[in-house]
Amino acid sequence: MENKFDIEHIYARNRLDKEKGLSNPQNVEILGNKVLLEKRLNIRASDYRFVDKVKYYKGFTTANGQEKNGSQIVELAEISNSYSDFTETDIINRNSKIIDSFVNFLRANQLLKE
View (cartoon, rainbow, N blue to C red):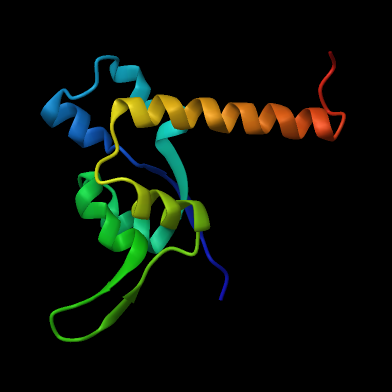
């Protein structure tokens, strides 16, 4: 079976609407706040706070003992294990890291004119 993926907002857009928790609301849409996630998980985790999304990212056992598999995205497991919340500072720092990594990839593969 082929996995279908979506782009997930780690800091949920509806959290921004309800809590007004970002000093710059545009940060909810930058790359540092987005992650690749299996569509089946994105549907379940989409509008929750990070602390509540983690169970969908990692996987969990329901009250009746049914296993719900988490994401196969390694970076998402690392984020889930490393953060208790995902804040605006985390978004900005992750954004810089992603951009720096991508630029380094382009340079290493001679895909960037300098």
